[in-house]
Image (cartoon, rainbow, N blue to C red; front, side, top):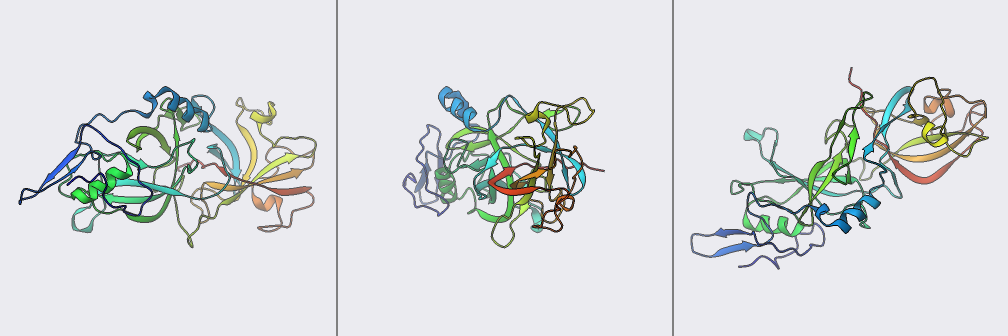
Length: 333
């Protein structure tokens, strides 16, 4: 029995994919189940970037300029912090990401499986967002390293008895897809890392899952069925058209040697209950005499959360109508 037209498991609309390397399951009565979509262990999965035009489209739409995603300096809840600018979002919503695990013995912690995560959208797709809701796919005893590189393959793998049906989690993560040459700065000393692999429509792509799945840098729990972003205040002097950001103003705001400092004020920091790594953007106009660091917390700008503004600090403010994807780097003691 060929599973190429097997029933939809209700995850998303499934995409057709064929491969010369398939997976076969034989039963004691001699009957068979076959999938051309589930690839045999060791199969060489093609790289998305091997298609030059596809790679160029991804590079043009990932929102990153240059080969490095640098750290920037700002303020969060009264403290100086460093953050990554992963672009802006017109809406705060999430798409699935399937991660593969093996059940731990005696209900112990799940065990990671040597299998890339599975995603269904990348930059350039209308459905793309770096915010992902996790779905755990537990492998069964029959699984021996097969490659599940698409949703059609996932459906087939369930029918073949290789994996269990996905289990939705209440955890969301921040995973930005980009080209393989992009690096992410991880320290103020200039250390950096490359992206990790993921499967997308039968091919290998690359993404940064900022901070992983559990340390609250880019991961957060669903609350009341919705993602509630924090507030990011882009402080701008009344005589300037750009926020206080050395890179935008192309001028120094303090005496250090870098050009990464901003006076963005985030209303929460990593580890705070309301921290989400995504923010509603506000334009906050301050007097021309305002200096970097004159406001380091929301309470320095507003009398209370949500307003009103402190008249000696804020001349006017407005919602920019966009959301900023800016995870804050956690500084360990």
